[in-house]
Structures are given as C-alpha cells and as structure tokens.
Picture 1: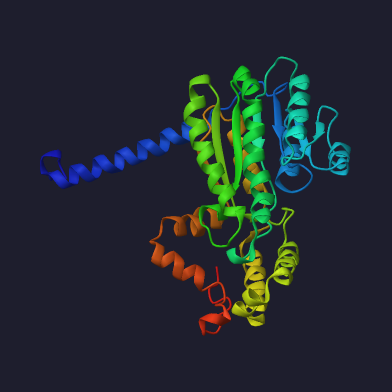
Picture 2 (picture 1 turned 30 degrees about the horizontal axis):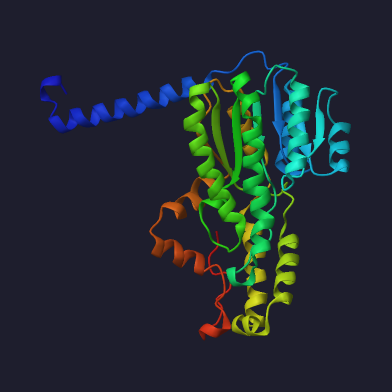
Length: 339
C-alpha cells in the first residue's frame, strides 16, 4: 500500500504502534544501565534474621557490597555472619524501640565512616495478628504498626542524611497483599502507609539525588509467617473473645476461617524467592531504578486486579474466600474460589 493510499485511521494506528515500540525499546535500554564500582558501597537492610532480608543480605554480600544487616536477635546475626564474608556486619535492631533504632543508626554512621549510605532496604516481616476486626484490640494494631510502619519510617528519617550524602537509594519491600485490604488488623494499614510514605519521599528526595523504589512482592515460603503462626494467633484471639462476640460468629465460622487462611497461604505462597531478589538487585544497582517493581504472579495479576476492580466485584470475590458468621443466618461457604 502506498503512502497516498493510507487512511487517517491507518496513520494513527501506525503512529500509536511506533510510539509503543519506541517506549519499550527506551525502557529496555534505560533498564540496562548499571551503577559502576559496587565495591565499597554500603547497604543497610532491616529484618535479616530470616526470609527476604536474609537472602538479600547474602546475595549483595557476594556482589561486593558492604552489607550492614539488622537482625532482631543475636542468634540471627551470628548465623548470618557465619555464612557471609568478613565485610558483612550485623547490628541488633528492634523497630518498635526508638532507642534500638538510634543505636543502629549510630552503628551505620560509624561503619560508613563519612562515605554515606548507598542503599537502605526497609523490610518488616510479620503479619500477625490478622483476624476479623471486632476480634481485635488497639494493642493488636500497635503490635503491627509500630514495627511495619512507624518503625520503618523512623529509621528512614534518621538515615536520610547519610543517604543524601551518597546520593543513594531507598527500596521499600511491601507485600502485594497490602494492595487490597481483605483481612482486619494493622497489616494492610501498614502496607498502605508505606506506599504513601514511599510516594511522598520519592518526590521530595529526587531533588537531592536520592531514588526511592517500591518492591511489591508475593507471599514467599522464605518468610517467617506461616499458616501455623497465623492459626496459632487466631486461636489466641478466639479464646479471648467475649461470649457474645463468639456466639455471633459460631464455632463453625472459626473452623472454616482457619481453613480459608490455610488455603490462601498455600495457594498464594511462592517458593521462588529469586523473583524478589532480582527486583531488589535492579533497584539497587540500576542507574535508573524503577518506581515500582512487582515480583510474583499474584502481585502482578491477582492483587493488582482486585485493587483496581470495582468495589462490588472485589467484595464479592473476597467474600467467596471466607465463611459467613452464624448471626447472618447463612451457612459459611468456605473457600469457593481457587486462586
């Protein structure tokens, strides 16, 4: 077909396709640029006893970074050092304790010795307690928010001077389940809060050369929270309920709710932790890190879809996953949706 025979609509379609192709090529080229001379650059990672933080600390240590890993226990720090190089340092950190945070920040400042901090990976593992909202008390919210939101914000604020000095980057690890509030408790609140904090921090810190990224990931088997931990906490909450609340839900609801949580963890739990590590590595060593990364199929599809779906649809799908209380007069459906 000659250019003279092209209709206006054909020209528009060609222009759109050319633009899309150009954007894809541009992104691929942009993503391929890497920071040079990784050796000697300091990265501080929280929650390194087990799970994602532990795996990332070992991986970055092998890549030549000077890793400072924060562990909640002395044993966790010892085990991590035993399988890492001598350049990896550990520090004990309790994100719910301002004094512990202050000591960790001082340790990082002394270790970096005026060089500044190239990377901060904020990660707070743990979800419990998650349960129907009227099973919970204020201390249950504090136990999650003090660590998974306020603690991470506090340590980030105190490390910003070191990050500015090195024109470094902040990478916040956020479970993709936080994109959709489907259970009661402080878990989704902490994740939504970190999303908002990351967005504002990214816009403000770009003037100082500090880059901020979010890695939204699936639920991985390497995490510290398993279905056994969730079930044990649910039993504790159930046993402390008043007779009135317990009767309104019924024993059958409790049994079915446990089954629903177990099935959710089993079906959504991913065993390939390398998906997250690759995203974290790119966020740290790419010259132009992305604003957001999504690791795992449910992070890219299921939870993202639910977060954008009409409320009536997302409510229906999530209600199908959990039983109905006895007081509603409806029988609990159990888990009717295979995710």
